[in-house]
Length: 427
Ligand SMILES: Cc1cc2nc3c(=O)[nH]c(=O)nc-3n(C[C@H](O)[C@H](O)[C@H](O)COP(=O)(O)OP(=O)(O)OC[C@H]3O[C@@H](n4cnc5c(N)ncnc54)[C@H](O)[C@@H]3O)c2cc1C
Image 1 (tube, rainbow, N blue to C red):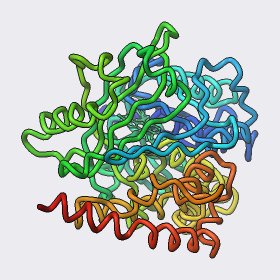
Image 2: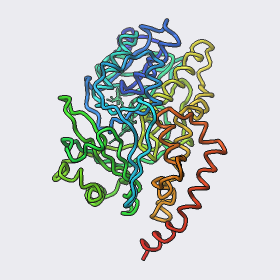
Image 3: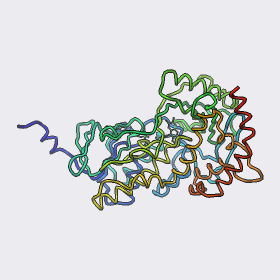
């Protein structure tokens, strides 16, 4: 009996690796794989649901660790329109601290531009890009099968789930998610002249925990589609319950009162909402023949940095896939450990220690330490953080005794003031 499937099967296209999602995680996986195995050119397929360049709600902050990854791939960033950065401005309650990055490797870019640049680079390097969604996939025999929205059927040895925060590739293989999902609001506004002092700084204001929101308000200098200066601003840390968007908006405006130089730009902001998923090391990173990268794994819960997870997981995935294709073992047993050894991981560990405190005590002890001016030319915790973020300081320094001595010194110094301010808040 002819069921119609025989014809579809005959038209099935084959390649060695299928990547679902052409965002930075997908493009970078293809680029790292092509660097390790140039012979895979023409055998890597990227399925992308949207036509590029597509808009992506994001702060667009690119850390020095990501820039280093892009350089490893030989990508020339000179033509990429971007805003170079000098450092962070970390705000907490009424204090501000401005740690410098100490190099020129961090910048802000519009995501539509960056993602298009990376996808083109992957296509130029030999990946085939098709603008059609993957609508389902399954493991079958010695490979995976993927059905695309245009009716095509593809077969490959490996599938990479790079379909972002709302992607379905985990569901197709029955892989549960662990890291929680949070809601963010984002808005662009013309860059105010009064804020000229902040035009090369990533402003992160960690006051929202005082309003019961486990997140921060950001102001990033950025560019709009026309290349004009804007402030990319927003608030993180919303949960998915009724009234959250309103509470986030109110909190944003309350925090804005501490930034008079920005106030005029956000008179009546028109926010856009978007979810984010927190990275956790206690999740499934892969299953037989399937590897998850980028925001399928999550973002750093402290700063919301997702591009470092994209770049590091893409590099690790590419190494594991190259070995699997050579050796025929598709369990990807070593992948999770490789991701945990990546440069983003030490900052993830330090960052995660911040949030539990803001839930227990409302006033976060570590944040009080971070905005404290260190004595006589020394570094405080957030100076280390900025150094590792920019790639100037190796992440392993955060496991060293010198760093922990700094933590203890600053903790002892801020404890009395913190106790007093907590009491004031609780009263
Ligand atoms: C408001 C906000 C601000 C942020 N700011 C920063 C920041 O400043 N710095 C930073 O490092 N990170 C930031 N992040 C996090 C960062 O945006 C993400 O971590 C990053 O985009 C993840 O990249 P990705 O490639 O995994 O996913 P995405 O960029 O979401 O790409 C996934 C792609 O998959 C496609 N897709 C989905 N389903 C399918 C399907 N079935 N078939 C085919 N294609 C599919 C989508 O169309 C999309 O193009 C921010 C996030 C938010 C929400």
